[in-house]
Length: 330
Image (tube, rainbow, N blue to C red; front, side, top):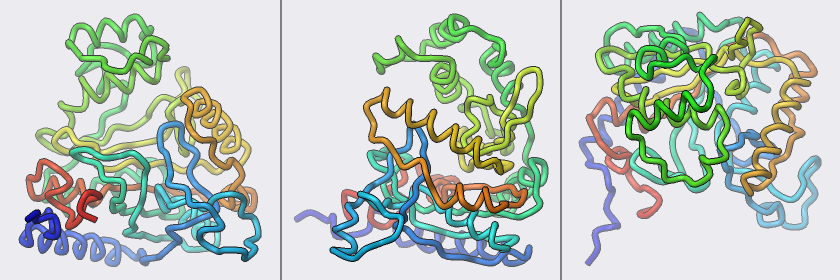
């Protein structure tokens, strides 16, 4: 008889997980944030080239009822980002949420299609303040040394031996070959700069990050800005930051984009990329765009993977060891 009816995580680990979640709530409560809840099912979804949301036909949810603004699908949220930014626009100056999120096709040692995200936003924060709060959270929760700050350029120069803003694609291919990185995706023959940079980051650079103390990597290429402000320099950079612990990417943060026209432009570019990849097109209009047009205030926001945090705290090697019922036992 199969024991798939039992949790995949030990009860001891689940108790430790509960302690970590209490610690997270206490951290934000002590700093004047308040906890919020936003819909798991929404008209809107993040338009990202590589993230696939779970869509549910509108009729399956509301039957024949009419919902203003809804078209063919409602979307299980890949992140509570849009709704939380609408709250910030409405005057909620410091908020956090521990939310269930869903991403299609993500299953592996560190991924489950349903996962837990901690996300927070604070009005008035810039890049520096966003990084400082993230560093403080990780130091407090994981009891790690003070986080180091390294630019994206510095990490590539130190651990891959190339300047990611100046190197050619041929230079990047040489780094991949030198490090004997296996390439299983035939699409890499048509890949551009960002795809090669992402490959070098994941296969060459990341393993060195956060080994002795957490490392926050900031100032990413403008082409990888997602929803971050781009700072115009000789080589424009996105005011985006990620923290790594023991070679694991734990959280992703932005000094948040405020320009609705720029968001609309990025949505269009991402959908063009999705079309090229054969992926489903996602709705480019959103209530976040409306909020930006109304006047979203300056803020910094961060999304942190709670399951990965628990893995790091307990020494677990797979996500199945820290959640009760992964998708194959759900």
